[in-house]
Image 1 (cartoon, rainbow, N blue to C red):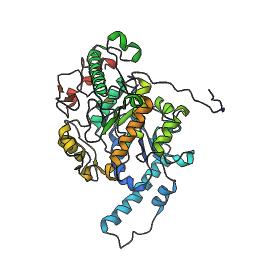
Image 2 (cartoon, rainbow, N blue to C red):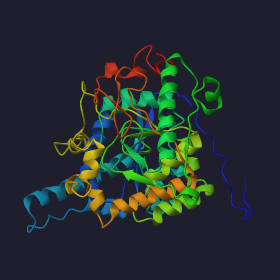
Image 3 (spheres, rainbow, N blue to C red):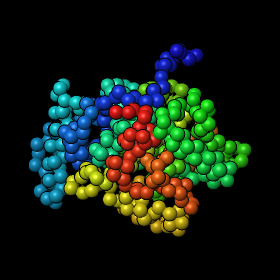
Image 4 (cartoon, rainbow, N blue to C red):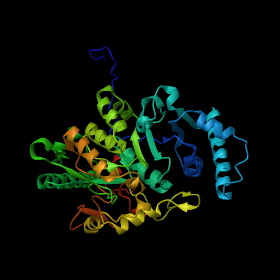
Length: 428
């Protein structure tokens, strides 16, 4: 297909609603500086050595190849004027760079480096979703180069199994919430979440949740219209909590996506969106991808618990636990009252991105309003792992439901239990 100027338009195909026979997946991580090697090399090694089904790793490198090779080939002694810890860090950084290049140069190793600049691309956060990567697996697992990195139980035993049953949506463990300001939007959004829960509860007997069949099962998954130009509708970006219910954006780390979506994300029809991402001061690739995928699929993302209590809870980074600060934030700031009262008192060490530059939070909010206005609607919101089970508890205000326990054991995950909601999609 070609447009009026003769530019080729690829034909993209939506993925299937389930991918039960998929047993392997590709890990994609993106980086641009050797300083981040300290963050991801040890977790990456653990994943490659112990995670079943990981048959391909693609490191998207968004800076010149020389940034890696010069570090790996540097044999000069670190400056004696540096502190011992800094000298040791520099030596380790060289070793990491050398190891990464050795893996890449070994044709039998599952890891390869995609050098963006050598493939005609610029430094762009959306490069990790580019079709030129050509992942060999249908299932793609994403992690940010600085984490957080969730455990094998959370990601593979639980998350990958959820993705197999919902391969036509984005699936992840790190959700963000959009707050509606108008009562009309609040009512419509609440109806959407309740309809999603009803659909998932019915799905325990294998009800097809595809948009083509939802109507005959009386569970239409309603998107909430945005009427900004007529009624002045606006939304707020809630960066305080990671709610499993009623979330609208998945942060990239710990997400699964079907490779068919790469064609759509980089399709010429969405060039305007991609330009917005690279020119906006907050580079809102997470908001853009989640919003686009939900409108393509006609469904909200699905979420799984990022911590399983009866397994290894997380991969350590430099002997520190990655998840502590995130879980502490979530526990202390869960109530909406607390959020509003402490809007200007957020611990900067726990919210680094918000303090990179002045008004970072406001700019993120402006971005989500621009993106939702572009599409004209918002998906009905995520539902937690406990949807359709006795572990789903109502809340008085804020997000409508929570899962109790917040951090389940594997035997509580419904799609892993025979007879549980979602299990029949891919019975073992």
